[in-house]
Image 1 (cartoon, rainbow, N blue to C red):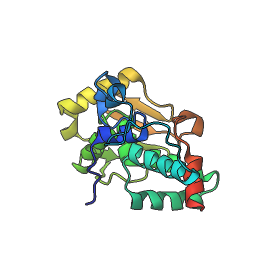
Image 2: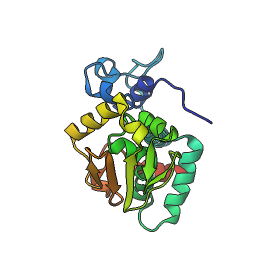
Image 3: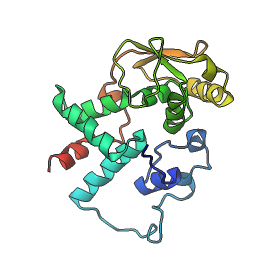
Image 4: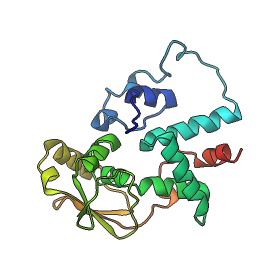
Amino acid sequence: MARNLDAKCRQCRREGEKLFLKGEKCFTDKCSIERRSYAPGQHGQKSGQRLSGYGQQLREKQKIRRTYGVLERQFRRTFAEAERKKGQTGENLLQLLEARLDAVAYRMGFGASRAEARQVVRHNGILVNGKRVNIPSYSLTPGDVVELAASAKSQLRVKGALEAAESRGFPEWLEVNSKECKGIFKAFPVRAELSPTLNEGLVVELYSR
C-alpha cells in the first residue's frame, strides 16, 4: 500500500501555510509554520523567487493533495470523476475529497488529523450505516450515518480528538452527536463553507493544459 512518508511539518512549510497534518500541534505555537515560515531545505530562506503560471498551478495541486492526504493517482481519478459530474469541476473536486470517509471521520472528530482518522478507518473503527467500512477513500452520500465502532470508542486518543473537535465546532454539512460518537453526512459542502486558501481553479487549469 503506497503512502506519503514525507515529514508532515516539511509539507506545511513547503506550501507556506498550515495544512493541519499534525492534529492539535497545529493549533499551538509549536507548529513549524509559527517558528519557521520559510520553505525547508538549503535554499528555503531565499526570497524574491517568482513562480511561473505552471509553477503556481502545480503548487496549488500539491497543496490540495497534501491537505487531504491523497496520492497522485488517487487525485487524478478524483479529478476525472469531478469532470464527469454536472457543475463546476473545481467545486466538484473539493466536494468529492470532503466526501471521503477518512475526511468525514476527521471532520467529525474521530481523529486529531486526517492521517489519524484514516488509521481509525483502516483498523475497522468506523461503521457506515451500521456496517463496518475500512476503506479510507470510500465515498459517502448525503444521509449516510457514520459512527465509531465499540472498540474505537474506548481509545483515549479518539476521545481527546472528539473533545477538541467539539470545542472548535463542526462543519455545517455534518450533524454530529459527540456523546454517541456518531454523525450524519447531511450534504456535500458548498464552496463558501470550505477553506478560502484553496484555489481549485488553478488545478482545473493545470489538468486542462
